[in-house]
Image 1 (tube, helix red, strand yellow):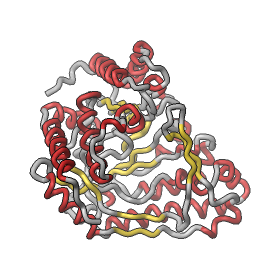
Image 2 (cartoon, helix red, strand yellow; image 1 turned 45 degrees about the vertical axis):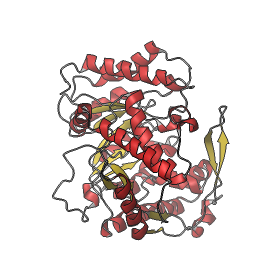
Image 3 (cartoon, one colour; image 1 turned 90 degrees about the vertical axis):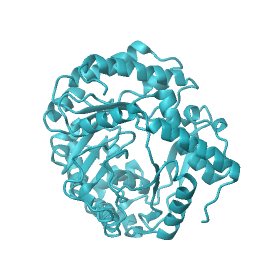
Amino acid sequence: MPYALPEHERLYLRELAHRQAEIAALPVMAYRKKLWTDMNDAVPGARPPFAIESWTFDRDFMPASLFKCETPYGRRLENGFLRHIRHHEILNDDHVCPDTLDMGWHVWVDNFGIEITAQHAKDAEGVETGYHFNYPISDLCDGFDMLKPATYGVNRESTMEEKAFLEETFGDILPVAMRSGTYGNNYLTHSLVQLMSMDTYFMAMYDCPETLHALMALLRDNAINVAQWAEREGLLILNNGGECSCGTCFNYTTLLPKGESVPGQVKLSDMWTGMNSQETVGVSAEHFHEFCFPYYRDIAALFGFVYWGCCEPVDPIWELSLSKLPNLKAVSISRWANQQYMADVLEGTGIVFSRKPDPNLLSVDRVLDEDAWRAEIRGTLEVIAGRNIPAQLVVRDVYTMHGNLGKAQRAVEIAMEEIDRYYPAYVEA
Protein backbone atom coordinates (compact mmCIF):
# COMPACT_ATOMS: atom_id res chain seq x y z
CA MET A 1 0.00 0.00 0.00
CA PRO A 2 1.23 3.55 -0.60
CA TYR A 3 1.91 5.25 2.74
CA ALA A 4 0.72 8.80 3.27
CA LEU A 5 -0.75 11.07 5.94
CA PRO A 6 -2.79 14.26 5.73
CA GLU A 7 -0.58 17.24 6.52
CA HIS A 8 -2.37 18.08 9.78
CA GLU A 9 -1.94 14.50 11.01
CA ARG A 10 1.71 14.45 9.98
CA LEU A 11 2.45 17.63 11.95
CA TYR A 12 0.52 16.42 15.01
CA LEU A 13 2.23 13.01 14.97
CA ARG A 14 5.63 14.66 14.72
CA GLU A 15 4.77 16.58 17.89
CA LEU A 16 3.98 13.30 19.62
CA ALA A 17 7.22 11.79 18.33
CA HIS A 18 9.14 14.73 19.82
CA ARG A 19 7.46 14.14 23.18
CA GLN A 20 8.29 10.43 23.11
CA ALA A 21 11.91 11.25 22.27
CA GLU A 22 12.08 13.68 25.22
CA ILE A 23 10.75 11.08 27.63
CA ALA A 24 13.06 8.37 26.27
CA ALA A 25 16.06 10.64 26.92
CA LEU A 26 15.25 11.16 30.61
CA PRO A 27 17.91 9.79 33.01
CA VAL A 28 15.29 7.57 34.68
CA MET A 29 15.03 5.50 31.52
CA ALA A 30 18.69 4.48 31.75
CA TYR A 31 18.04 3.49 35.38
CA ARG A 32 15.04 1.38 34.37
CA LYS A 33 17.01 -0.37 31.64
CA LYS A 34 19.57 -1.27 34.29
CA LEU A 35 16.81 -2.63 36.54
CA TRP A 36 15.52 -5.01 33.87
CA THR A 37 19.05 -5.95 32.75
CA ASP A 38 20.28 -6.73 36.27
CA MET A 39 17.16 -8.77 36.95
CA ASN A 40 17.40 -10.84 33.75
CA ASP A 41 21.16 -11.23 34.24
CA ALA A 42 20.46 -12.53 37.77
CA VAL A 43 22.72 -9.93 39.42
CA PRO A 44 22.66 -10.64 43.19
CA GLY A 45 20.41 -8.23 45.06
CA ALA A 46 18.87 -6.77 41.90
CA ARG A 47 15.78 -4.70 42.64
CA PRO A 48 12.61 -6.21 41.11
CA PRO A 49 11.14 -3.91 38.45
CA PHE A 50 7.40 -3.21 38.64
CA ALA A 51 5.10 -2.53 35.68
CA ILE A 52 1.41 -2.42 34.83
CA GLU A 53 0.25 -3.59 31.41
CA SER A 54 -2.20 -0.99 30.13
CA TRP A 55 -3.75 -2.31 26.93
CA THR A 56 -6.33 -4.48 28.71
CA PHE A 57 -7.93 -1.38 30.26
CA ASP A 58 -7.72 0.80 27.16
CA ARG A 59 -11.37 1.80 27.73
CA ASP A 60 -9.87 4.01 30.46
CA PHE A 61 -6.26 4.42 29.38
CA MET A 62 -6.76 5.04 25.66
CA PRO A 63 -10.40 6.19 25.23
CA ALA A 64 -11.65 7.08 21.74
CA SER A 65 -12.01 10.72 22.78
CA LEU A 66 -8.23 10.93 23.13
CA PHE A 67 -7.48 10.42 19.45
CA LYS A 68 -7.20 13.17 16.87
CA CYS A 69 -6.16 11.21 13.78
CA GLU A 70 -8.93 10.06 11.44
CA THR A 71 -6.98 7.89 9.00
CA PRO A 72 -6.43 4.27 10.11
CA TYR A 73 -2.66 4.44 9.66
CA GLY A 74 -2.41 7.78 11.42
CA ARG A 75 -4.44 6.44 14.33
CA ARG A 76 -2.22 3.36 14.56
CA LEU A 77 0.86 5.57 14.87
CA GLU A 78 -0.94 7.89 17.27
CA ASN A 79 -1.82 4.95 19.49
CA GLY A 80 1.83 3.94 19.73
CA PHE A 81 3.12 7.40 20.57
CA LEU A 82 0.36 8.17 23.06
CA ARG A 83 0.70 4.88 24.89
CA HIS A 84 4.39 5.47 25.61
CA ILE A 85 3.77 9.09 26.58
CA ARG A 86 0.81 8.35 28.83
CA HIS A 87 2.51 5.36 30.40
CA HIS A 88 5.21 7.68 31.68
CA GLU A 89 3.07 10.69 32.50
CA ILE A 90 0.22 8.79 34.16
CA LEU A 91 1.55 5.48 35.48
CA ASN A 92 5.28 6.20 35.84
CA ASP A 93 6.16 2.60 36.66
CA ASP A 94 9.31 0.86 35.38
CA HIS A 95 8.12 0.88 31.77
CA VAL A 96 11.00 1.88 29.47
CA CYS A 97 9.99 4.44 26.86
CA PRO A 98 11.72 3.49 23.57
CA ASP A 99 14.07 5.93 21.88
CA THR A 100 13.15 4.46 18.50
CA LEU A 101 10.07 4.18 16.31
CA ASP A 102 9.62 0.44 15.96
CA MET A 103 8.09 -1.55 13.13
CA GLY A 104 8.11 -5.19 12.04
CA TRP A 105 8.38 -7.25 8.89
CA HIS A 106 5.15 -7.74 6.94
CA VAL A 107 4.92 -11.46 7.63
CA TRP A 108 1.84 -13.64 7.15
CA VAL A 109 1.25 -17.12 8.57
CA ASP A 110 -1.64 -19.54 7.99
CA ASN A 111 -1.29 -22.18 10.69
CA PHE A 112 -3.95 -24.68 9.65
CA GLY A 113 -5.17 -24.05 6.11
CA ILE A 114 -8.71 -23.55 7.41
CA GLU A 115 -10.55 -20.46 8.57
CA ILE A 116 -11.29 -20.20 12.29
CA THR A 117 -13.93 -17.66 13.24
CA ALA A 118 -14.98 -16.43 16.67
CA GLN A 119 -17.97 -14.88 18.36
CA HIS A 120 -17.41 -11.95 20.70
CA ALA A 121 -19.45 -10.71 23.65
CA LYS A 122 -19.55 -7.26 25.25
CA ASP A 123 -19.33 -6.67 28.96
CA ALA A 124 -21.50 -4.36 31.07
CA GLU A 125 -19.58 -1.32 29.79
CA GLY A 126 -20.09 -2.27 26.15
CA VAL A 127 -16.51 -3.37 25.51
CA GLU A 128 -15.85 -6.66 23.69
CA THR A 129 -14.13 -8.82 26.28
CA GLY A 130 -15.32 -12.44 26.01
CA TYR A 131 -15.05 -14.62 22.93
CA HIS A 132 -15.85 -18.11 21.72
CA PHE A 133 -14.22 -19.93 18.82
CA ASN A 134 -16.42 -21.64 16.24
CA TYR A 135 -14.53 -24.91 16.43
CA PRO A 136 -13.98 -26.69 13.09
CA ILE A 137 -13.31 -30.03 14.83
CA SER A 138 -16.09 -31.63 16.87
CA ASP A 139 -14.40 -35.03 17.19
CA LEU A 140 -10.65 -35.32 16.78
CA CYS A 141 -10.94 -39.02 15.97
CA ASP A 142 -12.27 -38.16 12.51
CA GLY A 143 -11.36 -34.45 12.17
CA PHE A 144 -7.59 -34.49 11.95
CA ASP A 145 -7.37 -34.90 8.18
CA MET A 146 -8.74 -31.39 7.50
CA LEU A 147 -5.59 -29.78 8.95
CA LYS A 148 -2.69 -28.75 6.73
CA PRO A 149 0.92 -27.77 7.47
CA ALA A 150 1.46 -24.04 8.02
CA THR A 151 2.08 -21.76 5.07
CA TYR A 152 3.85 -18.42 5.44
CA GLY A 153 5.65 -15.62 3.68
CA VAL A 154 7.03 -12.10 3.90
CA ASN A 155 6.35 -9.04 1.75
CA ARG A 156 9.72 -7.35 1.71
CA GLU A 157 8.62 -4.67 -0.75
CA SER A 158 5.77 -3.36 1.37
CA THR A 159 7.94 -3.59 4.50
CA MET A 160 10.58 -1.38 2.93
CA GLU A 161 7.92 1.02 1.65
CA GLU A 162 6.64 1.53 5.17
CA LYS A 163 10.14 1.86 6.59
CA ALA A 164 11.07 4.49 4.01
CA PHE A 165 7.89 6.45 4.76
CA LEU A 166 8.49 6.37 8.53
CA GLU A 167 12.11 7.42 8.10
CA GLU A 168 11.13 10.32 5.87
CA THR A 169 8.39 11.45 8.25
CA PHE A 170 9.92 10.83 11.69
CA GLY A 171 13.55 9.79 11.18
CA ASP A 172 14.94 13.17 12.24
CA ILE A 173 13.16 12.75 15.61
CA LEU A 174 13.19 9.01 16.33
CA PRO A 175 15.33 6.47 14.46
CA VAL A 176 13.15 3.84 12.77
CA ALA A 177 14.08 0.38 14.03
CA MET A 178 13.06 -2.99 12.65
CA ARG A 179 11.95 -5.43 15.35
CA SER A 180 11.02 -9.07 15.22
CA GLY A 181 9.73 -11.90 17.28
CA THR A 182 10.44 -15.49 16.33
CA TYR A 183 7.20 -15.87 14.29
CA GLY A 184 6.39 -19.52 15.00
CA ASN A 185 3.32 -20.01 17.24
CA ASN A 186 4.75 -21.64 20.37
CA TYR A 187 1.48 -21.49 22.34
CA LEU A 188 0.57 -24.99 21.31
CA THR A 189 -2.48 -25.67 23.47
CA HIS A 190 -3.97 -22.27 22.64
CA SER A 191 -3.78 -23.26 18.98
CA LEU A 192 -5.34 -26.58 19.89
CA VAL A 193 -8.41 -25.04 21.54
CA GLN A 194 -8.97 -22.82 18.52
CA LEU A 195 -9.58 -26.06 16.66
CA MET A 196 -11.73 -27.89 19.22
CA SER A 197 -13.52 -27.31 22.51
CA MET A 198 -11.93 -28.10 25.85
CA ASP A 199 -14.30 -31.04 26.20
CA THR A 200 -13.23 -32.44 22.85
CA TYR A 201 -9.57 -31.93 23.74
CA PHE A 202 -9.83 -33.63 27.12
CA MET A 203 -11.83 -36.58 25.74
CA ALA A 204 -9.31 -37.06 22.93
CA MET A 205 -6.71 -38.07 25.53
CA TYR A 206 -8.83 -41.15 26.16
CA ASP A 207 -10.71 -41.67 22.90
CA CYS A 208 -7.85 -41.23 20.40
CA PRO A 209 -4.53 -40.53 22.14
CA GLU A 210 -2.48 -41.41 19.07
CA THR A 211 -4.35 -38.83 16.98
CA LEU A 212 -3.88 -36.21 19.70
CA HIS A 213 -0.15 -36.89 19.68
CA ALA A 214 -0.19 -36.50 15.89
CA LEU A 215 -1.94 -33.14 16.24
CA MET A 216 0.55 -31.91 18.84
CA ALA A 217 3.36 -33.00 16.54
CA LEU A 218 1.79 -31.02 13.70
CA LEU A 219 1.51 -27.91 15.89
CA ARG A 220 5.12 -28.36 17.01
CA ASP A 221 6.36 -28.82 13.46
CA ASN A 222 4.41 -25.80 12.27
CA ALA A 223 6.00 -23.65 14.98
CA ILE A 224 9.49 -24.94 14.25
CA ASN A 225 9.13 -24.66 10.47
CA VAL A 226 7.95 -21.04 10.64
CA ALA A 227 10.69 -20.06 13.10
CA GLN A 228 13.44 -21.76 11.10
CA TRP A 229 12.12 -20.17 7.90
CA ALA A 230 12.38 -16.74 9.54
CA GLU A 231 15.94 -17.54 10.58
CA ARG A 232 16.90 -18.62 7.04
CA GLU A 233 15.25 -15.54 5.54
CA GLY A 234 17.24 -13.20 7.80
CA LEU A 235 14.09 -11.86 9.44
CA LEU A 236 15.24 -12.34 13.03
CA ILE A 237 16.41 -9.24 14.88
CA LEU A 238 17.90 -9.50 18.37
CA ASN A 239 15.20 -8.99 21.02
CA ASN A 240 17.49 -8.60 24.02
CA GLY A 241 16.44 -5.02 24.75
CA GLY A 242 13.15 -3.16 25.05
CA GLU A 243 11.10 -5.96 23.52
CA CYS A 244 8.80 -8.15 25.62
CA SER A 245 8.41 -11.93 25.37
CA CYS A 246 5.37 -12.03 27.64
CA GLY A 247 3.27 -8.95 28.21
CA THR A 248 5.21 -6.07 29.73
CA CYS A 249 8.21 -8.16 30.82
CA PHE A 250 11.17 -6.45 29.18
CA ASN A 251 13.92 -8.59 27.66
CA TYR A 252 16.96 -6.45 28.56
CA THR A 253 19.95 -8.73 29.10
CA THR A 254 23.66 -8.97 28.37
CA LEU A 255 23.43 -12.78 28.24
CA LEU A 256 22.04 -12.82 24.68
CA PRO A 257 23.28 -13.40 22.11
CA LYS A 258 25.23 -16.30 23.60
CA GLY A 259 27.90 -15.90 20.92
CA GLU A 260 28.71 -13.34 18.25
CA SER A 261 25.70 -12.29 16.19
CA VAL A 262 25.73 -10.66 12.77
CA PRO A 263 22.76 -8.51 11.62
CA GLY A 264 20.78 -10.49 9.09
CA GLN A 265 22.29 -13.72 10.43
CA VAL A 266 20.65 -13.80 13.86
CA LYS A 267 19.92 -17.34 15.05
CA LEU A 268 16.98 -18.65 17.02
CA SER A 269 19.51 -19.48 19.73
CA ASP A 270 20.11 -15.72 20.08
CA MET A 271 16.46 -14.95 20.78
CA TRP A 272 13.95 -14.81 23.64
CA THR A 273 10.66 -16.59 23.03
CA GLY A 274 7.49 -17.17 25.03
CA MET A 275 5.39 -20.25 25.78
CA ASN A 276 2.45 -21.16 27.98
CA SER A 277 -0.29 -23.72 28.41
CA GLN A 278 -3.18 -22.07 30.21
CA GLU A 279 -5.61 -24.50 28.65
CA THR A 280 -4.22 -27.50 30.57
CA VAL A 281 -4.99 -26.27 34.09
CA GLY A 282 -7.49 -29.13 34.36
CA VAL A 283 -4.97 -31.74 33.18
CA SER A 284 -2.91 -33.83 35.60
CA ALA A 285 0.84 -33.34 35.73
CA GLU A 286 1.27 -36.81 34.27
CA HIS A 287 -1.06 -36.13 31.33
CA PHE A 288 0.63 -32.78 30.67
CA HIS A 289 4.00 -34.53 30.64
CA GLU A 290 2.72 -37.14 28.20
CA PHE A 291 0.64 -35.08 25.79
CA CYS A 292 2.22 -31.61 25.94
CA PHE A 293 5.71 -31.41 27.37
CA PRO A 294 7.63 -33.31 24.64
CA TYR A 295 6.38 -30.91 21.97
CA TYR A 296 7.14 -27.76 23.97
CA ARG A 297 10.56 -29.22 24.84
CA ASP A 298 11.47 -29.69 21.18
CA ILE A 299 10.65 -26.05 20.40
CA ALA A 300 12.34 -24.62 23.50
CA ALA A 301 15.59 -26.37 22.58
CA LEU A 302 15.96 -24.05 19.57
CA PHE A 303 15.95 -20.75 21.44
CA GLY A 304 18.26 -18.70 23.61
CA PHE A 305 15.84 -17.98 26.45
CA VAL A 306 12.27 -19.10 27.13
CA TYR A 307 9.67 -17.21 29.18
CA TRP A 308 7.10 -19.74 30.38
CA GLY A 309 3.56 -19.15 31.52
CA CYS A 310 0.72 -16.71 31.85
CA CYS A 311 -2.20 -17.21 34.26
CA GLU A 312 -1.81 -20.94 34.83
CA PRO A 313 -0.13 -22.15 38.06
CA VAL A 314 3.29 -23.58 37.30
CA ASP A 315 4.03 -25.46 40.52
CA PRO A 316 1.90 -28.56 39.68
CA ILE A 317 3.98 -29.29 36.55
CA TRP A 318 7.33 -27.98 37.77
CA GLU A 319 9.05 -31.13 39.00
CA LEU A 320 7.95 -33.52 36.26
CA SER A 321 8.11 -31.15 33.29
CA LEU A 322 9.05 -27.48 33.51
CA SER A 323 12.22 -28.03 35.52
CA LYS A 324 13.46 -29.97 32.48
CA LEU A 325 12.46 -27.39 29.82
CA PRO A 326 15.54 -26.36 27.81
CA ASN A 327 16.70 -22.73 28.03
CA LEU A 328 14.09 -21.74 30.63
CA LYS A 329 14.89 -18.20 31.83
CA ALA A 330 11.67 -16.80 33.33
CA VAL A 331 8.54 -18.34 34.86
CA SER A 332 5.18 -16.64 35.37
CA ILE A 333 4.05 -16.87 39.00
CA SER A 334 0.32 -16.13 38.77
CA ARG A 335 -2.10 -15.58 41.63
CA TRP A 336 -2.92 -19.30 41.49
CA ALA A 337 0.69 -20.42 41.92
CA ASN A 338 2.32 -21.49 45.17
CA GLN A 339 4.77 -18.63 45.62
CA GLN A 340 6.72 -20.22 48.45
CA TYR A 341 7.26 -23.47 46.57
CA MET A 342 8.33 -21.70 43.37
CA ALA A 343 10.72 -19.41 45.26
CA ASP A 344 12.32 -22.46 46.86
CA VAL A 345 12.84 -24.31 43.57
CA LEU A 346 14.02 -21.23 41.64
CA GLU A 347 16.50 -19.98 44.22
CA GLY A 348 20.02 -20.09 42.82
CA THR A 349 18.96 -21.11 39.30
CA GLY A 350 19.07 -17.65 37.69
CA ILE A 351 15.51 -18.20 36.45
CA VAL A 352 13.32 -15.11 36.89
CA PHE A 353 10.43 -15.26 39.37
CA SER A 354 7.92 -13.30 37.25
CA ARG A 355 5.18 -12.48 39.73
CA LYS A 356 1.72 -11.46 38.48
CA PRO A 357 -0.06 -9.68 41.37
CA ASP A 358 -3.82 -10.20 41.69
CA PRO A 359 -5.45 -7.94 39.03
CA ASN A 360 -8.83 -8.10 40.78
CA LEU A 361 -7.48 -5.71 43.40
CA LEU A 362 -7.18 -3.04 40.71
CA SER A 363 -10.20 -3.79 38.54
CA VAL A 364 -13.16 -5.01 40.62
CA ASP A 365 -13.70 -2.10 43.00
CA ARG A 366 -13.99 1.50 41.90
CA VAL A 367 -11.75 2.62 44.76
CA LEU A 368 -8.40 0.98 45.48
CA ASP A 369 -8.23 -0.98 48.72
CA GLU A 370 -4.77 0.27 49.59
CA ASP A 371 -4.24 -2.07 52.52
CA ALA A 372 -5.14 -5.14 50.46
CA TRP A 373 -2.94 -4.03 47.56
CA ARG A 374 -0.02 -3.29 49.85
CA ALA A 375 -0.42 -6.71 51.46
CA GLU A 376 -0.46 -8.36 48.01
CA ILE A 377 2.86 -6.76 47.02
CA ARG A 378 4.41 -7.30 50.43
CA GLY A 379 3.41 -10.96 50.42
CA THR A 380 5.55 -11.57 47.34
CA LEU A 381 8.49 -9.53 48.61
CA GLU A 382 8.54 -11.41 51.90
CA VAL A 383 8.97 -14.64 49.94
CA ILE A 384 11.81 -13.49 47.65
CA ALA A 385 13.72 -10.66 49.36
CA GLY A 386 17.19 -11.48 50.62
CA ARG A 387 17.37 -14.63 48.52
CA ASN A 388 19.20 -15.41 45.29
CA ILE A 389 16.04 -15.09 43.21
CA PRO A 390 15.84 -12.58 40.33
CA ALA A 391 12.28 -11.25 40.26
CA GLN A 392 9.86 -8.89 38.58
CA LEU A 393 6.30 -7.82 39.40
CA VAL A 394 4.06 -7.25 36.39
CA VAL A 395 0.32 -6.57 36.63
CA ARG A 396 -1.70 -8.02 33.76
CA ASP A 397 -5.38 -8.63 32.94
CA VAL A 398 -6.84 -5.50 34.51
CA TYR A 399 -9.85 -4.96 32.25
CA THR A 400 -11.29 -1.79 33.73
CA MET A 401 -10.29 0.99 36.08
CA HIS A 402 -13.89 2.29 36.14
CA GLY A 403 -12.62 5.55 34.68
CA ASN A 404 -10.31 6.11 37.65
CA LEU A 405 -6.72 6.16 36.41
CA GLY A 406 -5.72 7.68 39.73
CA LYS A 407 -6.25 4.19 41.15
CA ALA A 408 -3.51 2.87 38.86
CA GLN A 409 -1.20 5.74 39.81
CA ARG A 410 -1.66 5.02 43.50
CA ALA A 411 -1.10 1.29 42.93
CA VAL A 412 2.27 2.09 41.34
CA GLU A 413 3.24 4.37 44.22
CA ILE A 414 2.40 1.73 46.82
CA ALA A 415 4.24 -1.01 44.94
CA MET A 416 7.35 1.18 44.66
CA GLU A 417 7.20 2.01 48.37
CA GLU A 418 7.08 -1.66 49.27
CA ILE A 419 9.88 -2.62 46.88
CA ASP A 420 12.05 0.18 48.28
CA ARG A 421 11.36 -1.15 51.78
CA TYR A 422 12.71 -4.60 50.92
CA TYR A 423 15.50 -3.48 48.56
CA PRO A 424 16.80 -0.28 50.25
CA ALA A 425 20.38 -0.68 49.05
CA TYR A 426 19.46 -0.49 45.36
CA VAL A 427 19.97 3.23 44.79
CA GLU A 428 18.83 4.98 41.62
CA ALA A 429 21.83 6.14 39.64
